[in-house]
Image 1: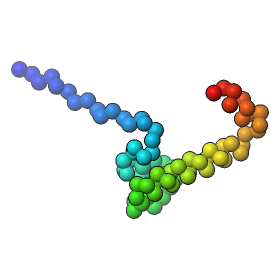
Image 2: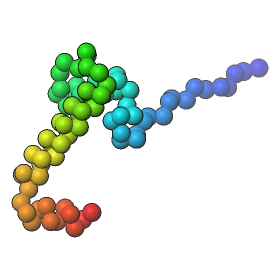
Image 3: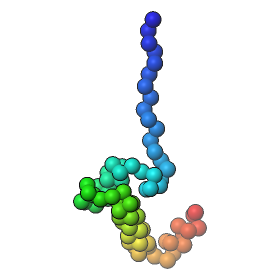
Image 4: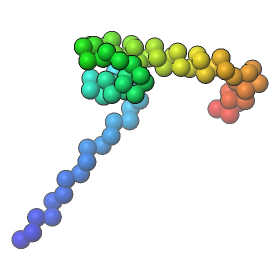
Length: 77
């Protein structure tokens, strides 16, 4: 008799919630954002730092748009 059981990969988490991420996932995310020194950080600190980075990026992006561009983006959503 042949065993036809296969192992399936675990589903990828796509919740979008930083607080739902594991510490190693947050460290990887922080690294991809260019944030260093995360090895000794607590999970809550990593979440705060990641949110702060995202807010800064969003603010910079908005500062690059004209009022007309911002209105067009708003109307598309």
